[in-house]
Image (cartoon, rainbow, N blue to C red; front, side, top):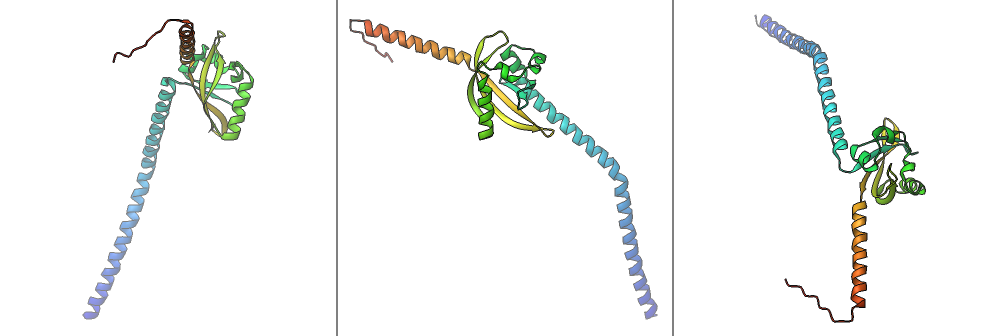
Length: 196
């Protein structure tokens, strides 16, 4: 009887182990059945996340106060945001048909920009004079970073029109010069007092 009991216990142990192996196989099979659905749901979630990220970047691009342009290293305009379009006075399609070199008052400035990118890897806040569609000249501070999209090189440019600031600085300098000239020609004594 003890032998049967031992054999029974041994058999029951083997039976329990076999049941656990079968349960594990069932769990594996059940998880395989759920994987395609999980994979599809995971892909849908990833696709939604990508769409949301693209929309965020599009909103940043479209609503930036700085002009943003994307061009090939040889200067072919690929894309531009509304601020850049407004700043330059062209339509989106007109800009896409241009070489960025055509926008510089001094065509050699584009070569300087490209050379600096080769030497330093980027341009940070360098001032250039550009010409608008109507021929007006504007002073623009540019920052340019080389980027890669789908394995192709591009220059991402951010530009701020500082023409009003330059005009104000020039007017202030002219005013100061006139004031100095007046002060130098007065033969009487003049006092300036700060009443604060």
